[in-house]
Image 1 (tube, helix red, strand yellow):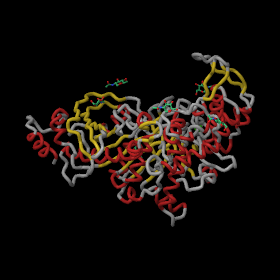
Image 2 (tube, rainbow, N blue to C red; image 1 turned 90 degrees about the horizontal axis):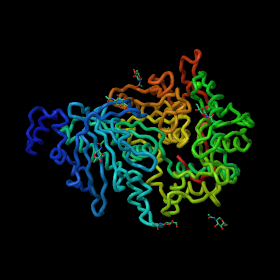
Image 3 (tube, rainbow, N blue to C red; image 1 turned 90 degrees about the vertical axis):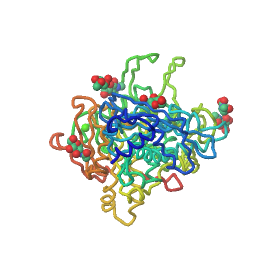
Image 4 (cartoon, protein in one colour; image 1 turned 180 degrees about the vertical axis):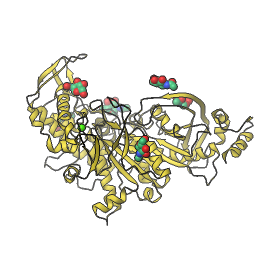
Length: 572
Ligand SMILES: *[C@@H]1O[C@H](CO)[C@@H](O)[C@H](O)[C@H]1NC(C)=O
Ligand SMILES: *[C@@H]1O[C@H](CO)[C@@H](O)[C@H](O)[C@H]1NC(C)=O
Ligand SMILES: *[C@@H]1O[C@H](CO)[C@@H](O)[C@H](O)[C@H]1NC(C)=O
Ligand SMILES: *[C@@H]1O[C@H](CO)[C@@H](O)[C@H](O)[C@H]1NC(C)=O
Ligand SMILES: *[C@@H]1O[C@H](CO)[C@@H](O)[C@H](O)[C@H]1NC(C)=O
Ligand SMILES: *[C@@H]1O[C@H](CO)[C@@H](O)[C@H](O)[C@H]1NC(C)=O
Ligand SMILES: [Ca+2]
């Protein structure tokens, strides 16, 4: 169907077509791209025709990505800019388009990470190797390499609310609408031909994905989303919690002490899942059964590295106290819970101290992702981090979380729990999160899934709603995995490297991911597929560690569910 239309377009553009336009070189042409621009797709947006760039990229070799298998791909690299009518702004979008012969009626938006909205080369083949057009946006930040923190303030005291909206949700909405329309025009799809629309992302990109599913659910057929950094004010301020624990206890643990606590935790908890493989598949059982106090007095030793001398000593009571407080999560001065934290086995990344050679001691290192949120978004001062934690207490963190929730509820927060438009239009969602994530608490994903279940099925009992939601939304906690990646500390664990394939299969072929396929990234079994249980079922290995069961264990499930009695309004 698409060839005659395309030929017509090319003829109009006065380009000689020697044969059916099925190869990249037939279509990866400035004239064809300009003729395919979706100029009428969005009210209030004007595409800047002169900004178009077009280039063929051949034999692009993409290896080692956690998000899709190694591949070599060819694609047409298109970028163009658009402005919002009445504003002198520019947003750049980027689409990687496979050759017409490879195109399989799919469009995929990719998200960013940390303070970036564009993941660049990190995700190219993610779309293209599945015959999809792959889209990314610069968010109006000025270039694909600019990040949110560079543009969020116009000046001290003045937030750029346009940029906050663009980063929050708007740029991705526009990217998707323009991308789908551009894809149809570029390949000459007829109006009644189905174009499947997907989102694939992790971390900050996961927040971006949910911003679309929550607001524009009916525009998406499927999404494969990891460790979303949503519930943004809580998520960002939580990065400062480990620092404030250290400050409050008055102990800055040497790196080696915390690393030894992690290794000992992994060693002890490995077997609790029924299989001794260096992977803790049940951080919940670890929480219930492992007593950190048993580590006090155990020795640690790490070699000198750079300007850091040999670290040698015994694990202290205070070191264990720091670990325990971090895992316990933020409570206010009245002992009421405000937020959640990382699972045991997550590597205390936010607690990392730095060695001070002048004083021969360890200093707190204020986590930038937390500090930036407070200085720029709450205090509106254009500095990238808090200069000090003076006067910052657990109550201050609580105040910041709640203040940010209120100020950015409609832009950055992204925890709206009603996905009815997505569900009602047939959307399918896989959501996964490493159990040993040390950047976004794993229980954050559990909380959101539970919020959606309770919000959308208020009249069903727990069993019935769990059964109903799994028709379209499944959550998987990935054994041993770190933040959006495999984990060097538990190298035999899986990561869902074929997540996009899984969601395509569910949407297009009705293959239900009862368990999610993960790929082992390193160790003896590198490359093997390992199945991952869907929440609320928990993994347990029987038959000497050979058979994976997904079991229902109420005591374990209960460890993942928290009541935020320290916050005066519901937090989904
Ligand atoms: C792609 O890159 C990887 C890693 O650098 C290399 O091992 C592989 O041979 C390359 N494949 C091709 C087809 O060039
Ligand atoms: C795609 O084109 C843009 C604009 O020319 C360029 O900055 C970018 O590096 C290109 N990407 C690839 C993967 O070639
Ligand atoms: C922890 O275990 C890893 C191996 O998994 C090792 O590389 C690292 O040195 C250990 N760290 C400490 C402090 O023992
Ligand atoms: C904003 O205020 C901070 C803190 O007072 C100062 O360091 C910085 O230079 C100011 N930046 C601008 C652009 O005025
Ligand atoms: C901390 O509080 C004290 C007493 O209110 C005040 O003098 C000091 O300036 C504060 N420090 C910071 C960094 O805000
Ligand atoms: C998992 O992988 C196996 C083998 O490659 C495949 O047959 C199965 O369909 C996959 N399962 C899902 C849910 O994608
Ligand atoms: Ca294990």
